[in-house]
Image 1 (cartoon, rainbow, N blue to C red):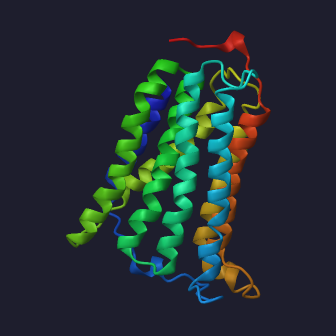
Image 2: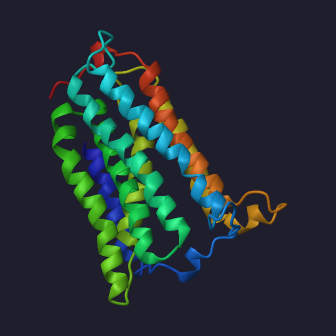
Length: 256
């Protein structure tokens, strides 16, 4: 816990040593703006469908485990943060599709808000499984509230002419680093290395996002932002796959 708090403090200090980061208007000018079937920015809109599929399957899976004789979770309360992950993924499909139909800052709020639910819930799940069940449960609502507030803080600042993405960027960075920190902590389930796969998939999604124009220029087939959606959804699928395949290691159970 001290390690995770130390990393959080380090990211906070780093972010606030940087100058404010406003949302660039150019962010909304995606390279692939082709309209198909009367839908503007078609591929960037439709590529959100995997989020909805993974999120829905994940919610159904977790609901089924509550009545299953198979022990998927050592403690049934451990399903709550994963429920947040999959609900967040499901909502991301609609929020991101809504944003990409007509990209602007007001719609971007609804794109980013569901993703903060995913980030916060994943951090809570890792704390719950690697450190303390009680602390992970206690942190879950506070992490979701803080992460969502980072989006509202950015947008309110934008409305007042001085947008600042530093807190939201810190939330994303910390959530990704926690996946790596998880590899250093004792696991009470098998397939602990899947955290590294999820981290790599999300990192690739961010790289594709940054290389949106360059990727689209390679034949004008698909843009980097469309690939970002697909790889981020794959990261969500990998979380589901991990839950479906892993097995409890009761000797590593942390009750406190």
